[in-house]
View 1 (tube, rainbow, N blue to C red):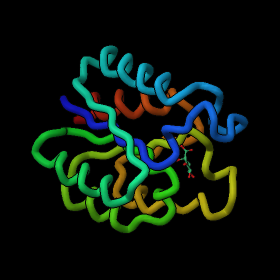
View 2: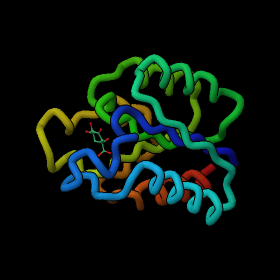
View 3: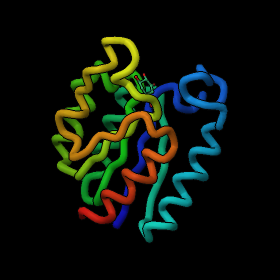
Length: 142
Ligand code: DQA
């Protein structure tokens, strides 16, 4: 089982950006946490981050035939990107959507997610743990 974890814009700023919402741990801490989750679940994985919508579309397309599952936190593109939704539909790879924060408890515009229209599961508001849950779910529901 090969899982690609995609993190979208501004997640590289973890630890600095809005710590009252996203916590004080850094992006490197998140990467280490996800690596542990790969080990625990016996999955093979790759972690990739970009601030650019088109690059995220390219990475999803490249995952076709290479990965069995995708975990994606599309950051702000969650609420705007038809292109990321279409790319996920195009490759047909089982996808779990993760948000560190509880997007439903924040501004109104964060309540809608394009990616939710294709994701098999969405995990919100569990901070880093959401990624472990997503990886575990893909490993158990392949
Ligand atoms: C986020 C929530 C989004 O609304 C926001 O734009 C992000 C991070 C989260 O992980 O909680 O960048 O996806």
